[in-house]
Length: 301
Image (tube, rainbow, N blue to C red):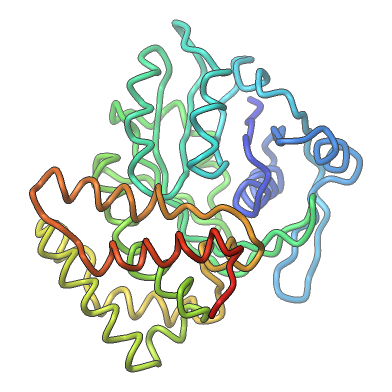
């Protein structure tokens, strides 16, 4: 079975390369015809530490390709999802869709696809796009997948790519719990690294940044007490240490002058907390700062 990977940013290129490396037939769906042409002619250049490997995949810029009956992994940024899913359609017997965006806001998109198997995933790999068809795998972490129906059978081709270099794991918890857990971690790491301009490891080493993480954790634990044992401050600090050299996606977007996912990540969690009658003042302040920096094209100071 062919697997479409829609979105050829860092995570999309990494996922496409690793799936093809495992023997799957992969077709990238890109934003532009130029990028599709480059990928068709040269494949994806995957870098891991000091080793490089060129991996052959297909590519097209046609969004309609996601409606051809193949399993499609939606790997673009959250803010690009709305326009893209309109081109997919929902027909009886439709092929599976796997969403791997950050945040929780895209969970509502599952209701648009009642005739297709739908699953949501969280990605803990580190990846940096170094060119239109090249990506560096900077950190290994699992992809965890949860199906809306609970049946993961339609997504077996993705699980077949599981390896020590690219773990793909099943989870019995529902998509809402899976995505919220990851979003809470992102709400602590991403905005603080983005505003302070540091890599992940500094959050565990700098006493002032560590204190800010503690304040954020207390706020989030108050709003989402059911997650307090799942997302602990010590656990987040340990994650920062394990990914010490990683640049968070939000900081990378700011430095490159790109739109961030602040609305999808922090905005989604802030909105969910409001439905519970709880405010998150520290997180709201950081979200406003990221928004200001985004408008100033990522300038610090």
